[in-house]
Image (tube, rainbow, N blue to C red):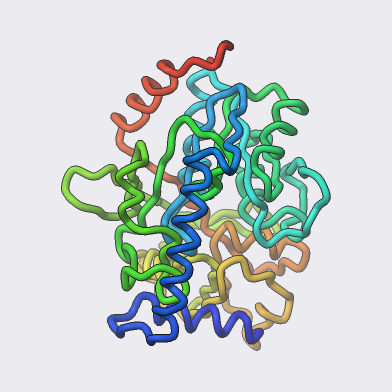
Length: 338
């Protein structure tokens, strides 16, 4: 593993431990908090421009570094809203992909190396148009020009204040919460938990406080990377050892989900968005190797018969979808939206 990857995993362990951060880190945290406050104030006062697009914009994000379930929720939103008559498009920064001088339209066959793993995954799963670019407003404009979408979902856009938004949804990892409660670099927080008071929805992944909106991630089938027509219930892997790898924000969640199906694991966690190489999966045995779907989009070029991924489906309570639709119907963008 690279030095950067080792440092990333070490930081993650520190952030979610009970140990108090060092004075050096808390000193840097103070500077970070000040910069965040100044930046937000600049957008509030108009010194920095907030640009609005002519269609509804739903922002999905979280307060912590790493995964909390944003991508599964974005996929659920795209599929749900399309069923309701909308034509959703998805915009993303494209983290982990190559730098591009202009917005890049992402298709199901676009490489993760070019666009980033999550945008490719969303394009493959939803069939909706996806566009990546660091400046989300430009990505949105490009999508509106190149496609017929009439609603935008901004994946991981909560802190991208240059993009005007109509609905904000914050996703919280119900198991890990906010870690040690500190902001970067002393902890995993991008913003203070007080930010949740401003969003329209707080969705907890897995578990949450009483009365909270809970998103459940369900995945009980493995799909072969080389031959996607080949599928196996996870229970069929029980009773023997398998390798499990994950390069996501919370690898332990994936490993625990496999163990709940009776699998015995030899695990290996990589930093989030890790660019897999063939040697990363070159085990000396031929045991099955199970990974997430986000990992799989980066391993297709060197897939062997023993590589499998486990797609997950987000499930949300019925009232969430109903109330979200009501919010959208009350928006006025001067054009038909559904």
